[in-house]
Amino acid sequence: MFGKGSIIYSVTKNKCPRCQEGDFFKNPNSYKLGTFTEMHVNCSSCGLKYEIEPGFFYGSMYVSYALNVAWFVTLWVATSVLAPDMAKMTQFLIIAVTLLAMYPIMYRYARLLYTNIFVKYKRV
Image 1: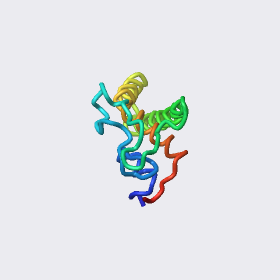
Image 2: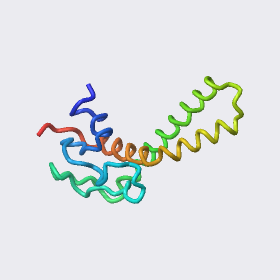
Image 3: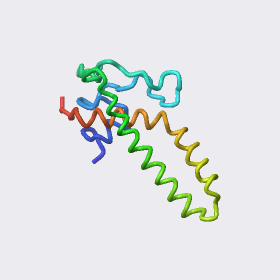
């Protein structure tokens, strides 16, 4: 179900959306902060050009926004249910620190999800 050929495989394994062989980002480590945004121009396996047109990844900002809102709401509900007496400012700080820590992963997931919307898997 989540094997090769699924969007989840491409996103979680940092793979090309078309062939799911070549890497999407140059460095597989999301937390190497100096290079976590660097992407390959083309897939090393199938040759797919990742930036389909100039400014293509501006659309991934909307995906990133949706992911971060979902994460925020999930954490807000979790802290409200698990610690109902916690101060709202403490909840906010926990959520803010967690969102900041998750930024490199959310950045990559947003770009990979957005690209997977437009590029479908083709078995090689």
